[in-house]
Length: 299
Image 1 (cartoon, rainbow, N blue to C red):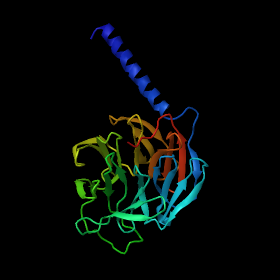
Image 2: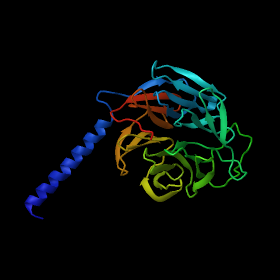
Image 3: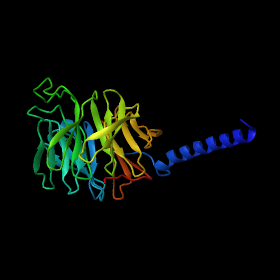
Image 4: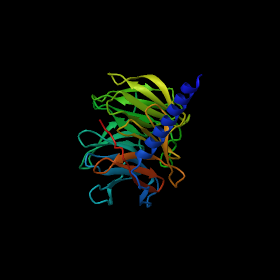
């Protein structure tokens, strides 16, 4: 390789490195640091943002769903006896869907806190324990069904051996879309409804799938050698995984950021606030926030 080509290649590599470093810094607003909102819970999970930017999250051991107000910045109890809800997600009509782990169900909760059970079994067998869910643009939704033995269950073994991912179409029909993972957990899709990310926390891997028109999945690809509890995505297509703090990957699966959290476990993450530009993080007893330059997306 001649000297001119070598110099050009070195310059190109330097530019790529600077761009990558700049991209990492640009995710978080300049001068902003992680803020503790509250540290008064037992185990926080499932943060979900509604249209106004309010955040709903669960304290599963205490069987409650809480609401953080974007207008006032305060936290209040939204619902008691919440079915030991874990993952949450709002549909386009403002209903809150919940992975209600107590009886292995999926709930739809309206603004009046009236509950409709959308899913309570598969082919007559009790589900393992719906954990996290994502609603697709067309109204169908996907949910993960790992098995974590709960101390509030009377049962001590599975009725369904496989720990799967299911799809429920807009007509309410349920089907298996993934059944070859060790322990699926976190799940998030792109706003165009074309790509679904599923974390196999049992194998410490995250995969991407193509979403087909009928809701089925194909073209499974390894996204990164890291599993995740909860997940979210921003308007640049970056994917946020949790566990050891929050780790951010670009859409190609390259790690671009790590946000450390001073807790042993970070369970979940989402965007919210009035401009969907605040990252909310649930970690053990706490709820945190971090002001970002990127925004959250829904559809």
